[in-house]
Length: 358
Length: 210
Picture 1 (cartoon, rainbow over the protein chains, first blue to last red):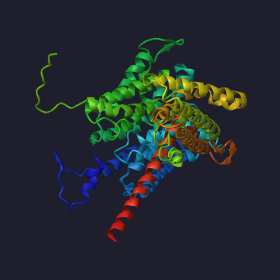
Picture 2: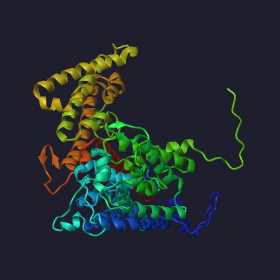
Picture 3: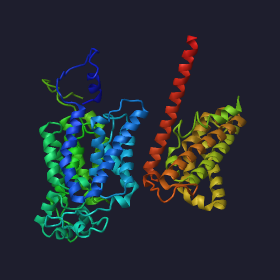
Picture 4: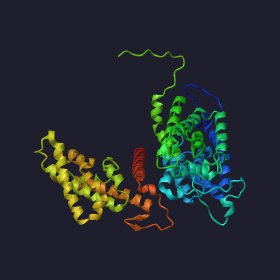
């Protein structure tokens, strides 16, 4: 939805002349943004329980920074200050979900400046940005502070499900760090990853519930999927996008992900591990379905989702980073205008033109 | 012809980097600190001035059909001289600038000034134009280099300005930082120009009413 429409509705004294369709509905940018925020909340709350106070601080700094930069820039540009529409809050929250739990205080602030100042307002503000602001913020701090951004705190919840995890035991330490599942997979291989959880079933369970190291939003696959299902039920996002993106990753990792003694053996990979680990779930449900930076038509969105999946797998299996969801979505954002140019919806009632003779 | 005007136009109004948007490659690649930026800027200033003089001197002898190869030979000769001088007297800078020194031969701004100005004007104006454009290029390089070094490294000319409390975002001295900084400077210049124009129009309108 174009934010301009919203603005027009606020001045009813003027006669509005617009082209069809004339839809009367209570939906607005503000309402959609706040509902998306709410659907993210369960996963956010769980990651605070999981990683403790540093996670909450990171999250609040991201949100406060985004809102403050948005208000400051809009005030400076003498525009209407629209921080109450929730889009800056959403950017901050989504960016926090892509960051490690315990990072120095300045990283969220630098990231929110990059997200709001560089990715959003240099393009003209809400509705005009080419790239997903939250992911630009994350990529910006990833390139700026590579050491801090790859230091992962371990969870407070232990293997038994109580607070006997590493953080609970050694309470006198600020933070205890460990590798993320995808990091172990990249550096030590699949068997080492399974061993670190005990068994394959325990690994899947830990990944689904969220009891493992990683970014704030990489934690609980189940809570994120519930949030995503609410968005699908409300018709804010199309089910095709997350299904196709996660499916592409699953199929490609099943075909290409398996290795025996360091040699590639086709069709032996572990698709479930790749589908529920890393930032894929949050990326597929909340980032690849962004209204501004993704194609307009359903067909275009499916092409977008396939592209995201393919690039994610390429980075995960062959690239230098253990995780590639952020970069895959940013790269596909760049080709969104191209997809929109070539993918048209079929006109209602039209007859396909006979092929022209040369 | 007003020589002073020929000189100053290169500084802001027709600044090679920010206004003509030529030679952005060195402006991105060697501006991660001020020292390299200044070295590259002065080298280009030398090359552009000498080349303008040589092109302007021989402008009536060069056949138009072969002018570009002739210009390139002239530029390449001067660049070779500059490289040998730098290698002999400033070996550290020579090493830092590396491949970009030889690339000066194909910098768009140098060929552009030869084609647009030196080939049509007398020697003295051509020299002044070269000096002005070179100075504008150096100014642009030092501005970008200064901003990137201060933000990305907390230092200026190698002198540590900001203490250990400052955590520089590395990206500013990496390639993307160059694009972002140049973009912001061009944006700021456009904004200030727009504000100036609006102010002038306002005063003009007010004057008309009286």
